[in-house]
Amino acid sequence: MGSDLSQIFGQNGFDPNSVEPADDFDVLPPGKYPVLIESADGRPTKNGQGFGVNLQFSILDGQFKGRKLFKWINIQHTSQKAQEIGQREFSALGKAIGLISITNTNQLLGKAVIAHVKVKDNDNDIRTFSSTLRGLTSTLAEQSQSTQEATGQQQALAQQQTNTPPWMQNGAVNQQANVNGTPR
Image (cartoon, rainbow, N blue to C red):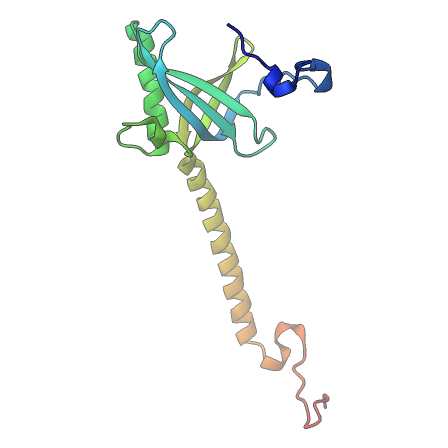
């Protein structure tokens, strides 16, 4: 029961030599990657006796920006251990996003998290998730410290300038203009 591709490619069909073949992606090095959840589809397991969520992520920044990562999370499974692991992973994802309750996979879409990626069997494996706010918090702390330092420098400069006559501030002599607009 095949599909007739002649309607798309014409009577001669698709010519594989007319298009550059897809390259195989190298495995990403282990690390933490900021990702956006692009799709989250709930579906039965292959054997139909459980349920899980199939997730697709896109890396948001860095050398691998735009690369895709995938994760299957078992929510309900005949194996108690597999179900427990899956629900712990789902918990990490929900907490990283900041959700109190997940009632629909659409709640996950468009959310950014940090994916903790390992290499397992020469393939990428997302082990857990953390909040982008943790990274944002440290970034904000660094920015706050920089702002405080800059403010301190500005205050020191202002103090120095108040001790300097107005015509000497900013390193230039304030020249008065005569009626014709030329300096005296």
